[in-house]
Structures are given as structure tokens and as C-alpha cells.
Amino acid sequence: MKSTISHKAGFLAPAILHTGFVPSSGAGHVTSADTVRTMPKATHAGKTTARNIALFLAAPFIGLAYIVALPVVGFAMIARIAVRAALATPATA
Image (tube, rainbow, N blue to C red):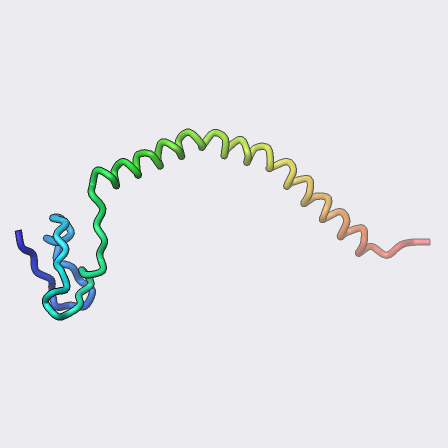
């Protein structure tokens, strides 16, 4: 199946995107399709699935890190505000 490229700069015909056909640069002109790198669908799907599974398994630990860090960050901010307020208040004698 042969696809054509529109003459508009940077526009790939939908047939190219759906079929995975990438024309070569043998025609003497450079098109945006010449720089497209295609990945087989099985490999791409496998990487996406593996990434989603890894994120799904890591999510509880990421949430736990936020739960543990929240009080630490909160107390640090309260201490910072208290120190700034103490330094800004003139000493009474």
C-alpha cells in the first residue's frame, strides 16, 4: 500500500500514520516522514504495559512516602515561621 504526503509542511497523510508506512528520502526532497522512527506495535505495547504495571505496584509506596513526609514538612514549615517571627520581634527589656 503506497501512501502520499501532503505538500503542507510537517503534515503526514493519515494513511501513513495508520499503516506505519514511512517513505524513504530517495525522492530527493526531505519530508517530515523521513525523520519518523517507528516501533513495532508489539514492542511498544509491551513497554507500555510493563510501565503501567510498575507504576501500579509502586503507587502504594509513593503514597506512603507522601503520608510520612507530610508531617515532617508541616513541622518544618511551622518551625520556620516561628523562628522568623521570633527574630522579627524586638526584644523587650
